[in-house]
Structure formats: C-alpha cells, structure tokens
Image (cartoon, rainbow, N blue to C red):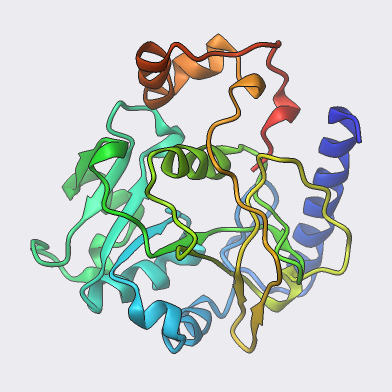
Length: 257
C-alpha cells in the first residue's frame, strides 16, 4: 500500500473510533478527536492488568504519559515498580523521565501525572535506562491480532525503536495497551515494518492475548530525514556516533504511531 493510502486508511480507522467513543459518551474529555482517548473505565482496566502475571512479575515499566494510562502509572509506583515516561516529542538528549518509587516525596498518584512528573523527575539518556519488563502503549484503535494505531504523531514507534536498538527491549518484554472495549475493532489496521504490535489488550472487562505480534528491532533510518533526526537529539546523537542517516526524503506518512 502506498504511503498516502496507508496514512488515509489509518486515519479512517481513527476517525471511526473517535466518533464511536464520542457518540457512546465513553470518554472523559469534551473532545476526543486527535487524542489518545481518556476512556471511562481506565481505572478498571488498570486493575485488570494488575492481576496478570506479566504485570506482577514486572519491576521496570515504560509507560506513555497519556491520561488514559495514569491509573496504570500510579499503580506501578504504588507497587514499587520503576517507571519511565518519554519527554514530550523526545525533545531533549535525555528523553525519558525516571520515576523511582523509592525516592518519591509525593504520593504515587500525583507523581504519575505527566505534568507533575515533568517538574520532579530526573531525565535520563536512553542508555541509562534499565531493561524493560513491560511497555504500556496508548492506542486510538487496536485489533485482536495486536495491530494498533495511535493518534498519528509516531513518537511511540520511534521510542520503541530507540529502546530496541539499545537492547532494552527483549523477547521477554511484554507490550500492552489499555483501552475501552469500543477501541477494539474488527476493522483491518494497515501496518508497516516500523509499527509496533501489542502482546496484550486490556479493557475494563476483557484481557485479549494477541498472537504473533510484530516487533521493531531498531531504528529505520531510511524513513527519517536529517530534519526529523535533528528534532530528536537522541537520534542525532546516534547518527554522530554510528554515521547513520536517512537515505530518502522524509514524508509525514512514514511514521504514524
């Protein structure tokens, strides 16, 4: 599928799910379009996730900063797990916030708020992270095979690629998304090599184990231009060390997240 057609197909899925959630009054925000849905029932989904062995065995969690996953981040800190969150747009050389429950001076539910975390958490370089036991993604839509789409910015896929290339994502790392039941769709979700599938989908009422999810093994430099690399210092640093770089023009559809 051509890049433009693929992007249009993904956006059509997003639009349908956003509209479905809004019509069902299934989100907390007045406007859901253009966002990772802050779905009603996120606390119940977090509680269901916490009952799974993959969660209970995890000591190090990397989670998205979206409101829908706040209950997951708070529960992780309450249970003594180390939590990493990405700096917005990966815009600094140290692109991850480190939330260490052993050093928190405020309640976990406050520290887990992305705005608060930005004021209290240490930022760390990619190579300073501990290997990840569990990765929590936000999604607009996901299907039972594990294919997902985010809001379209693409940063989750770049984060995953950076972490994979650094050896922090292994075959034992579990990738999960928490969503409303209406976000689990039968609509085909087109994917490319850089897209990251999930191993588990957790809704307030159901846990879905996905078969044969695809994983990115590292950064696809041929999908990035010098401009995109320069905007993400952690990528630029790897170019300077490894001499890697883009081999074709960047187009927005290359990374959809």
